[in-house]
Image 1 (cartoon, one colour):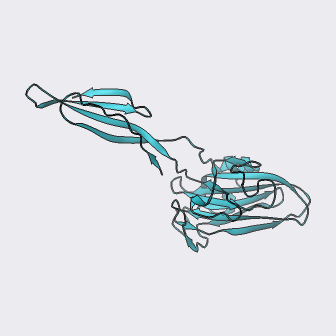
Image 2: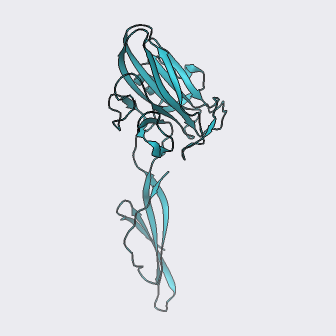
Image 3: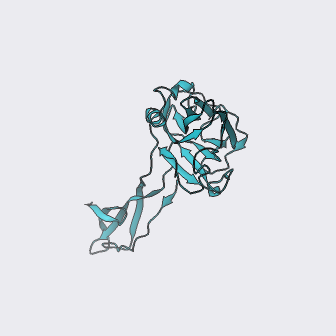
Length: 258
């Protein structure tokens, strides 16, 4: 989690020689938040209970992307995926997982969970473990219109984060996210496009999709407490003024004299 500190001009003490400051809180920058499993199912067009019905536990929140495409019978849908987690592995009570759906005929299935094989330590500073990139493949049974959905969810808590990287999708548009955004896709929850600076290289081109469960927001200074120490005529401190200032311009919120 990045902490962005703001510099302010020097504040002279009301009297005496010293002025003390202390950070007493931070406030997250507003970003897209993960959503409930019910919201994910509605977004992906899945029947109610589909995600929990995969048998990995009670999904509490997550994120997803989808794209609708036309395909012919016998055509193969493929994409590369990498599941990342900070959960202990294996972990039955908190079995976070990633999933894929190809609707209306392909159903929904688990890509990986905390009981999967993790041959790699996390190459990204945000995660402890990763499966590494794997390739999903599904053969279209009947010519028609399909929706490819990809998601990742927390199970049993809303604290420890997991993520899913996606790249090199062979159907639809903007299949490797090289536009640098989700053009051609729909998203819900905490999703973004990342490159190799994320700590993991894309499998095709310079970009990859990143879906996360618990957000890791950048933060900015929420407030600052300023302590002014006063003196009396003989140089002894007699009063202490506490000022609470608000971000981002440190406007005076309150003053307490003791």
